[in-house]
Image (cartoon, rainbow, N blue to C red):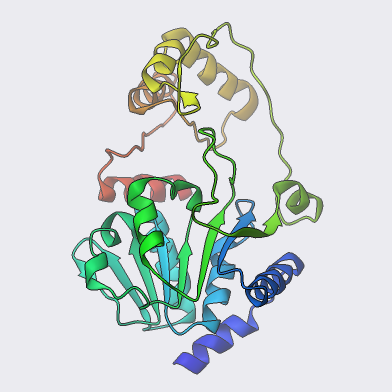
Length: 284
């Protein structure tokens, strides 16, 4: 099975920039860079290249922070390493595998059950989240031969940087290049002017205070404006609205419904099974 799975990875027709990535991380490893940050635009195949990267290591830990990402990662790795992928999540603790997909929220509580050098490769998906204590703990604990952090957004609004978890950005594939080379879709963006003044909203750690911002933004007339602009620019298209907080998401959802548009809300409080059903409905 192992030989067949590696053959699957080797048979992938890699895009030119993905080949650049493999050369870049190999060059960095030769220079002694153990902790590498990979910056690639959403949709450019970060998880696929992580599958390709894992073939050079005996045992790889791939950490995710959300249920959907864990399931997607498990599917991608299992496709190439059938029967060799385990999961650390909730009650599951399957570490005797070539590939282990782990929930950060679970593994940080179970580090005492895993030797520091157990994995010779550690990968952090969406690693711009890994600057809190919970997320930093496993990265500080493990002593792998190589660590890779993958992100599309290396700049955080709170001003924190990645210098405490990585040594160097070794490869970048920005969205502008992806669009120019035809691998990513062109973006058509509209900026809607409102009369809401948020200049006096306080900032916490570089970001807006959520409660104050919500009081300014989550108001009926503005939510109605959002829906009207949806009809103007995106009518009959699927849409995703990112909101200030959970209450704002619920209020905006209700306005869409009032206007006859089927809408659902997903937040940190949405039960896992309900979240799956909503995502499945959105994709269908």
